[in-house]
Image 1 (cartoon, one colour):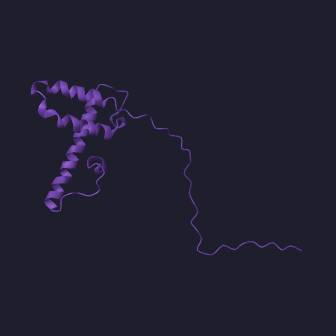
Image 2 (cartoon, one colour):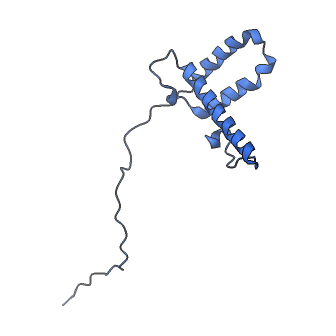
Length: 123
């Protein structure tokens, strides 16, 4: 969440503990608002679940939507929100393939004793 909402900046910007809490609450609020928009986009579509939508693409689209809200007419805001939801519906990810190319293997722990090479006696 932090990497995608902060555009891969790995640190919190605030130094004061109160501001750090405020920044974390802001990140959680933004994350939940994006997830709510993703749920709203697929409310009528029962064949797709919201976690099949691309979070990063949805985040960018919601961010662009919020940047252009001030220049839009408040009376047409529900229509613009429906356009946003229609755009979010296009970000469906492909189905994951469950077959692994390399199955998981339990590896032996290396022995602390040095390996002895077998020496064959040639007569």
